[in-house]
Length: 241
Image (cartoon, rainbow, N blue to C red; front, side):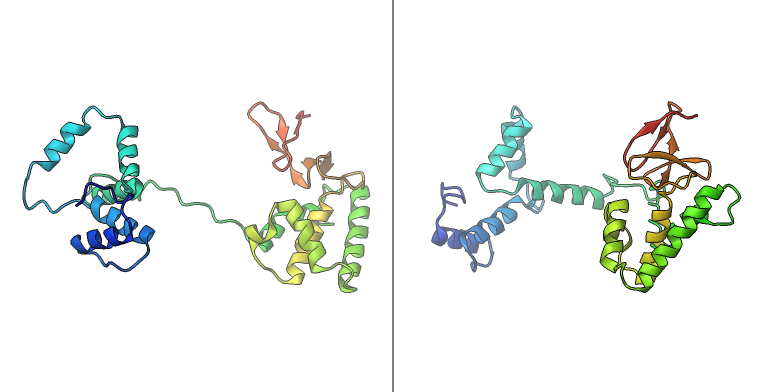
């Protein structure tokens, strides 16, 4: 190899050097540099001991990790791919275990939109004994109005998805596509959860009661370690009365 580094070689020199390494010589200068760098980063076959490893170890003994990384970068060698290759080799040989299959906890799968509706719709059940007369009256009126608007196509899919985006953060990301009817059911029940026990409708970040349970942002409040109640949507905290 010439005294030049591969970053200093022109296209003709790169092609010549690639040929010497047994690589294809077709490609751009940058492409050839990457192929050569990858070839150079590969571990040589351990069929002979020419003392090179010992000399390199001796030279690198007093170098900081950052200096070694800089040396690789200066010579156009992809140090990250070289490190990944070393990790792969170690995993294959059983030296490194990336994870323990027995101890890995399975991630809980997200509920479907209909499963979410099933979870919250009991709060809006007219037969719920905890529902106050005032809330029952407002819920019935809100259901009638929403169903009328939906059937008359005044309440569009886009309107409902916009509301679901506002509630979930990103409807499509969390649930994907659903039928218009399924989206309406979710929209309806979430909207009803903004109605408090006095029959009044609330905005986000308001604290209120639904069937005598503390709510905020159409969600039940969660108890914190400090015994305060916290909204998982907006983060507002309330005294646990």
